[in-house]
Length: 224
Image 1 (tube, rainbow, N blue to C red):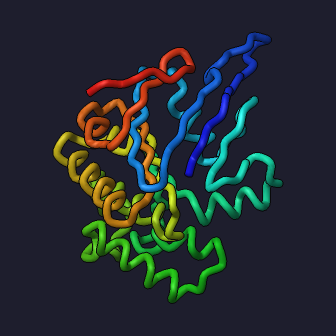
Image 2 (image 1 turned 90 degrees about the vertical axis):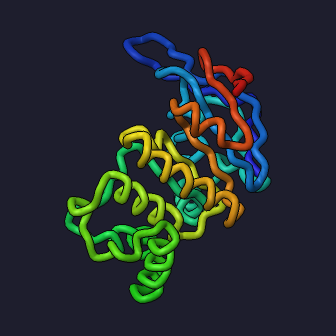
């Protein structure tokens, strides 16, 4: 489903070339769960941003569902991203003035879905992640784990085929982080969503069906 061919990313800083990703080749099948591990600065977040089409590679190909997505104009790419890819980040970026339900609805409303249908979808997802009793609460009234569950529900409201999570348990204590891991893995297994997780958490990485490491901008084999 997702294929990287000789994919590279280079930044120019103070006149110097910084090669963050160097000729990556990778295939991720539909329904896989994949952990991307590595030290800070290894290029993990850059890779997840490119996989999510939020950033463009300097060279190489990203193919999703048989399409070389960076050949598309930005409007088509944006529409594809909104319908196909969900994002969960370490910092959940919930809007503080809106309830859990309203935050979860937001991507659907932006896409043009009617308010009632968006609310119904959001309510079902909040139930799935165990927050049906907290739908009217604003982020400031929720725990860190509950906020992250809202961000997961929000990422799923457009029924994406791919879920990208960048350090989803990074700001959480061990027990709460384990609950978020369980939610992500259950979604991968029950909805056949392709799950790609960037993490420093070895326990989370070991629960994925596949693991790769990044070092000096290149992929290496990561062992349990």
